[in-house]
View 1 (cartoon, rainbow over the protein chains, first blue to last red):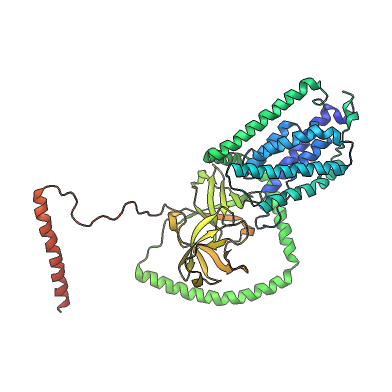
View 2: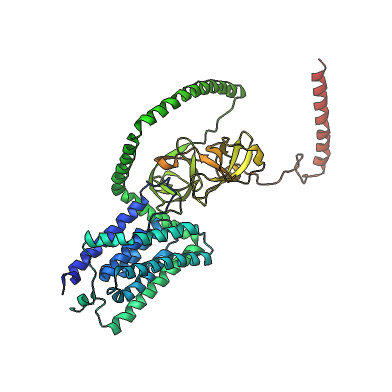
Length: 176
Length: 318
């Protein structure tokens, strides 16, 4: 068993993931950007989840995703559950295609992430429109999606060099 | 990797089932939110109430540091700021003189009229805990709630002008929907022309003024105050000034400093007087109790105007 798949490693990184998510949510809640109405910030939570899940799927289990995103939905005044459901669906589909992506360069992974985020933004709009809930303006939600995609390589670099989260290939899965 | 390397034939379907159940539960939550909105929003308020005050120990230092950093940045422009402040001080001195005179005059006039100022308009002051955290919503969370007697719909002000209204009350916290939020609509009066209008937030710094009767009577720089229509807000609270944008719309520059919200006053408003019934006839109670009553009352009625007329004429004679 390689060190990256030992259970102590996995549990440590699960805890780190939850702590990071809490920090991101608190950061969003701080009453600092009250007056700003320019670019909406990136959805760091989503970028972090995808980046870590594609590196080492075991440290981002389904339960973590549900807890973190549901908490964010409730605290950030979004329709509760919708963004969480979309995040779960997107992360599951990425998780299934993960092994094919490990052999390709980073650009392919980035493309897949971009597709997933764009799909989530569109699906959210469609569902809210079907439910006749009030929609945020199209420009703002698209901008947020684009900014999230743009920040993704930074999140990947930080998780790789700061947190030492390397990509697990098929070879690492064999020993167990 | 334990999960991925289990026997695929067994683990895959179980996992897929788990995901499906989770997604269905979440979508059910969304439907519940859409169908029974007040209940879920109460749930949200309860969760916020539980979580956010506990975060305060983490948030306070970060907020403090960020504010210090903001202040530090302003040191860079110290000189020009100083000049600007001096100029403003000069103007303010003139204004202060004018205000003092007006205050004396106002006191004299109020004394002449024996006006009672509204004694019920008191306020509770709260501290801003958190903002909405979303680029699509403009709201803040304050640290007073149902415990302090806050009710939904009350107006909040900073020292100067209206900030928004309470929408969502938890036990220890309540949420204030700012005037700039795209869901905020409040009735206002534009002074001095007295035009009624609706102030509609649109997620920008300056909310739109719409539904104005006579646009030509409204000039940039006019004062906007709450009108108290609909009994939502106490009338006469300062909102801001009218500005005209390049596309010809009228907007409001808010008097409250929404960028630097720290303390908020929640105005305890009492329910406005409402007209419950249409007007009644003034006269004897109807239907009349019995026959004798009908004979008496017209006689009395006919006497009354007579007396009044006599009284008038007698008063007019000398």
